[in-house]
Picture 1 (tube, rainbow, N blue to C red):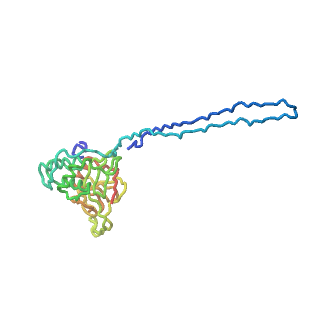
Picture 2 (picture 1 turned 90 degrees about the horizontal axis):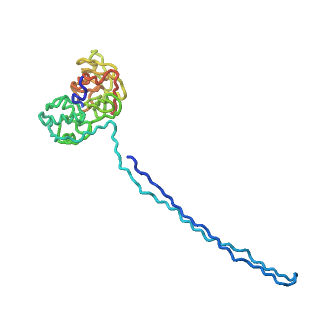
Picture 3 (picture 1 turned 90 degrees about the vertical axis):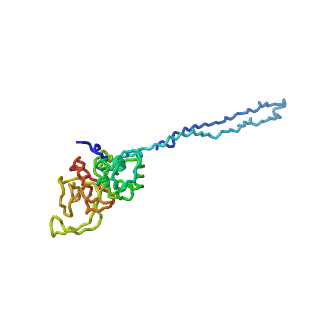
Length: 306
């Protein structure tokens, strides 16, 4: 079986070492001795002897001068800032060829658009110059990813962003193998080993209440709110072949992960939330998921956003 990629899937050290040298200087005192003292005795009778008393020698301490400590900081060396990329970032650089605003036209210029989309991680069926369903879906997914108007057509702005954008599209997850559904961006990311393998356009629950007849049980009414439940789920059942009549409409080759909510193929994947709660992808994208076992039983599905 071919690999997924073979089918066009896609500061440290600031405040460095500061050496501090402290030099201290101090003075010592000197002692000056007094001159010798001589005591004289007169030759007179003992009763007349007068004794002369001389004061004790005076010792004068010279003042001590102590220099204030001097602190000299060594020159500071600042390391150049280091930029560390997140583990799920893949840099590919700007487009090597100019990209034209082809609108939705087929032709040679569209081949360059298709190849660039694949390089950026947005899945489409091939580089054939035909502006078909999967090319339109990939363009819409790119526009959603960057927050552009998601028309599915390559206008001047879309072509310019596509040429200049230098990283592969990626989900929020940077570990493990899973399917990540971003309800804010309305995109589905296939994550392998913490890196985004490919991105698919999707449409999730529109958040509106519904009241519709059950397609499988005529006369019974289904009521609820069209929500795609956020959380970590597991694929727990599936239907491998063709179209199936769900309670609220036809679904293609569904992979269920929460009750009746599934990732499934559809003929309508607009640029806004439109489903009853399921995660819609194009029919060719769903065939790809089955062909390469991208969502096997028990695999993780992470739904987030709003």
